[in-house]
Amino acid sequence: MPIPENTASLFLCRTNLIKDPALLGRYRALLDAEELARLERYRLERDRHTFLISHALVRTALSEFADTSPAAWRFRRNRHGRPEIENQTSPPLRFSLSHTRDLVACAVSGTTEVGLDVEAIDDKTEILALAERYFAPLEVAALRALPSGKQRDRFIALWTLKEAYAKARGLGLSLPLHAAAFRIETELIEPNFNTQAAEEPSQWSFILMQPDPGRWLSLAARTGSASGFRLNAQWFHPLTNQNQTEECPMVAATNHFQGVAWSRQSGSNR
Image 1 (cartoon, one colour):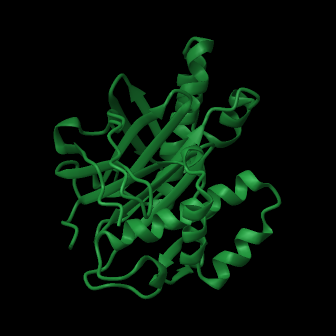
Image 2: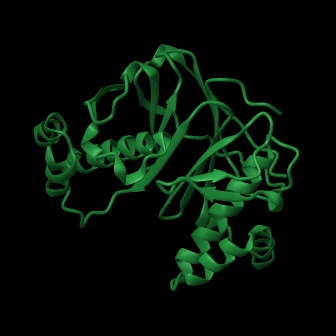
């Protein structure tokens, strides 16, 4: 099923809810040799669990849009480290994967470049020190102007926006985080790119949401204009027939509310 232009599908999965050994074994059977080797290098069971589910999620999510079985997908990394599909389909597919504590997210699109980042708030992080090091001056000033109780949420929201944009560009750490700055005013995101980004903000759509208290998710999409972007979201457990009835998070902020179409649905979980 081809994905229309300027459209992306978002798949969300709570890793702490997937515990069945038989199901986890089926996930493991989907992975290729390189993924299995990476899986075994994780020392902590929690990290292995997250890696296994996240890679099963990518494979099954991609198979929602192509006549390719989840185990048949092959991947490579570009020179900046972004994972891409090696055995590409026609029409092509793109994806972006991110995970944090107990939550995995995957965005799939067609011709539209997308980037996704999800982060959990860490109460031990020295957010103002990190902001001074990595954020643009306007972002640091906005953070400091907030009440202390709201600074941590805003820091994570800004961080995910920056990471999502960098991942959509496929540039990884070669793009400084301060190259793309964001102002969040209530429900409106105002992107501001410097010369290092070498991009026009009007060519991008940004969506910010909060899947759970303490977790923020951002999606960046090169839409070519500031209107007409559609995002379809669903909770999704790979290889199960469970009907995921929990409502997906609503959009918390975007750079053009009137141009974003938003739907929430249950997946087929093939």
